Amino acid sequence: MSQSERLARMRLARSTNIGPVTFRKMLDRFGSAREAIEILPDLIAHSKTARKITLAGREDTVSEIELAKSHHAKPIIFGDPEYPAMLARIEDAPAYFYAIGRIDLLAKTSVGIVGARNASANGCGFARKISHELVSAGYVVTSGMARGIDGAAHAAALQTGNTHNGGTIAVLGGGVDVVYPRENQELYEKLCEQGCVISEMPPGLKPQARHFPRRNRIISGLSFGTVVIEAGRNSGSLITARFAAEQGRDVFAVPGSPTDPRAAGPNSLIRDGAILCDSADVILDALRLAEQNTQLFEGFHQFNTDARQATTNPHLQDYDEIIKSLDRDAEIQAPKKPAQDIEINNDLPNPLPSKTDHSDSQSIFDFLSSSPLLIDELIRTSGLSAERVSTILIELELAGRVERHPGNRVSRIAK
Image (cartoon, rainbow, N blue to C red; front, side, top):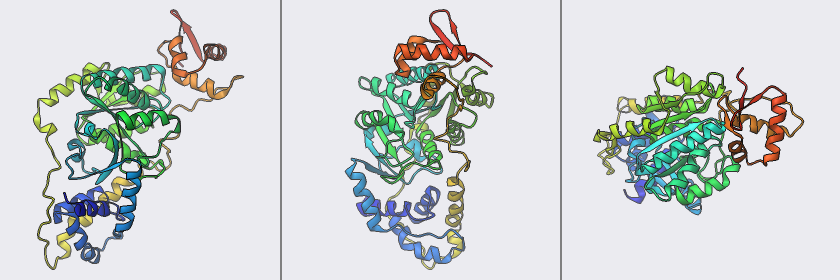
């Protein structure tokens, strides 16, 4: 693809009211972004839709590229050989995205792992186990670099990927250079060095709640299937699962205790037909079966990048599908639940009155579930001292919130 065509595609993608669906429609109709830009004034003149198109400026697009380059980020544009074939299959595949790190991972078979941000220690441990086994088998783990399940999956994949062919991809809600949450700064740096970090957002853009559903459809779109480990009923992880189902991908759900609100999401998915996942073997078996179908891994985004002959004196009906796609883009990109901050609110708001520091008590309580957990594992996961954890557990016991079990284990008291 020529550099002029690459720039034209980026300009077209950043134009007002041109979303990924309209972008694809215009490429299909005109054969190239350069030709689409040439026709754009006539399309605007004939269009009666309220969603008017304003072409992105060349200088603004070049500035965006230069800013990305300063962060060692490369644009991967629809039609590039590096563009992932699985992602290209979805209706609203991004016109382009930025990538830092191992771009070769984009070509490998990926599995998405998502879940609660305030995950239990058992949930994080299971995420690490599955991630380790998938990467050991040569696959890629894709997630969103959030705290909790996402971070555990990435960390285990990075530790494993050094000696195996697999790896991990982080899809960000903000710009590819913006670390969120800030506590994952060290993880982000390792991902940039040893894994791959991607985002369709412009560099420097701080994430907002409405960006995360768009990020989630990329996580599922990159992946053969998506695994949900702990998610409340209103969790953003369920949005990812829904995207995966709509994209024709497998949805795996890890069951949990009915008394743990974090199990409500996965248990609901299983009732709705998701694959019950109690080990990595379930995913690996499905992957091996799918790989026997060679069509699954073919390149779906191949098309002629040379401009076709445009229709002279075009009429409104020539552009009906493009005009309709503007409405489809608006529908797809509309916030799913405008009032819900899906990325910042905790899945389990559960205030704990305590004489000790509230945040530490809440953190310890969040790590626990109804399944008994070794206190040594709780100390390791929380990062607090053994004395501090012991004090908090005593207070939680006195408050009737946790109970001890043989073998130096502790759990929440089921309500």
